[in-house]
Length: 308
Image (tube, rainbow, N blue to C red; front, top):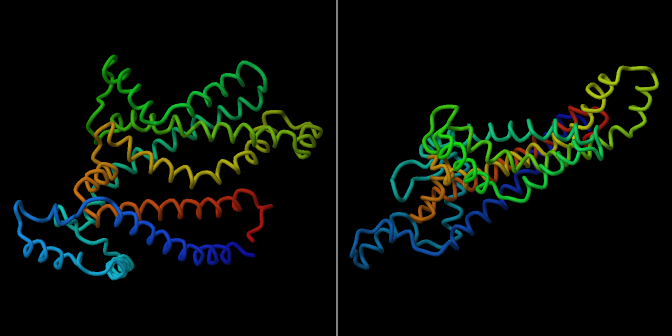
């Protein structure tokens, strides 16, 4: 199967998954305790006024009608209007998204920047102090949640050393702490995968043959072993980006960054269902597209792999 056929088939396969995800997202938000009318209605509103608000926002219609209307707007690129602010949801997310994306991408770069060299060193120096150091880092990073690293970083670099501010945004320096907090924990899995993949690759016959032909060890490692060992790491890229985006929602609260995560939490407390549904749907779609992209890259990096 050619690459284009594979992309076409996978794209068609995404549609039912997205449809299922939209149903789950809608149902979860619908089941959230609380009534959005209480947010919309003025204090001491009477039954007639409450009924008028329900009719205006179509909250008095059956759930399946509300879902079909939401899906219809979604397919047209209309994410609806915020119940709390009356502003278009698309505009609200567009303002917040760059803040979240910037430190999420930086966190992903930090995560891979740590994992790849640590994994390579751990594999090349098996059962030495370097390997134990690498695995010790993995154990430490995976043992604590991202918000714990965030609190520790704030205590050390923002409060004790006063090198950077713990709050605010807009400059690269203010992105570093949340990105490091997010990237540290994520790098644990990549380091483990990179080390295992590297060890497996070093035991392959083509590595032995390369050495037998007299290639310099540096070329064997960098040009042959590392390139092949990177394949599992690449396949993780989509999953990791989705994980970092989701984890970043919590980190935004810790660092008081006005990103999408902050908007999501505010919207949940205000029962602003259109905003909550839109953010969750964008998050799910991003994770699915990330996996799709990872599968395509998988074959591009290793031509031996066939698209089936």
